[in-house]
Length: 166
Image (cartoon, rainbow, N blue to C red; front, side):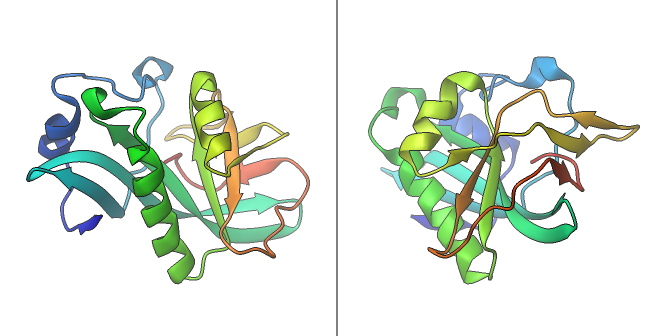
């Protein structure tokens, strides 16, 4: 596992080839926030998996706190099903925990919820409000959270992401 100093379009193409929409979300028309921290796995000097995260603020009721917004999780199509997503996601969240964050937050397509549940993520019950350049909208994708410490408990209530989604 490697912390990547650089991750962009060229590195993404190394992992997934010419797939223009590896996350399957481009049709939603959302503006996404870039990740600031990147973790990758290499095999035979080639990047084959990635996960990134960025600190984003959320509010739930009267509580406002930062979370590690996970995104950009991709694995080479030929290597899927071998636990590589788990490795890069765990590395990213370990780094976020080291930075003092208590929770991870992600958005994913409904068919990927079972994968993240296996990795210890919990579906959010309430819809999530997110920022977009011109307005605040309801996120059309399921949201999930993960405690980064054993004693971390997600507050109850509607969630507002005070940022672009990640």
